[in-house]
Length: 173
Image (tube, rainbow, N blue to C red; front, top):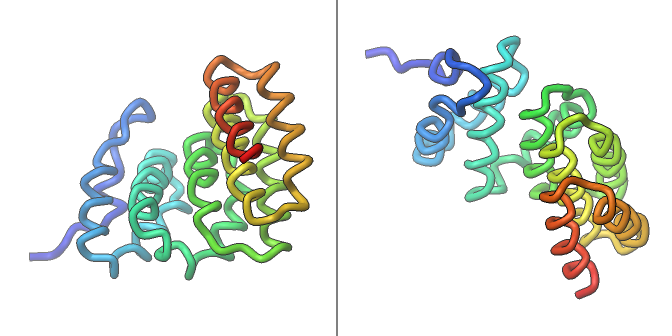
């Protein structure tokens, strides 16, 4: 019996549902050799496949962050190029899981600062979280991130203000 390609499993449906992302994430966690096939779906022409793949990749990398490392260069490139909101907010969750050089941290921070102008409040919230996460490893970034957190604590959505209050406590610790 021929195994079904991951992209086929992720297709169909609409952007209001994660489709079979949970099932695919579980499958890839059991057989991590298929992670490369899953991550390729982040560049699919189909926005539903991209969205569901981003969700599945994020879930796998939450448990096994090391699976992202071989794809660091590609993910940093995608971070700067992505326009789809679901892809952006999942990248904002994943990129801080990578071991980044100083140059890569600053590149990622530039993309996340750009995400703060996104229409989606979810993208903005995850971007500010990502900035705080990568600033933990780079003390030179903390003053700027602190200022961004303070700004969004005053002007963001209710969810963003709540997240920023938590981030301020973390930055103060």
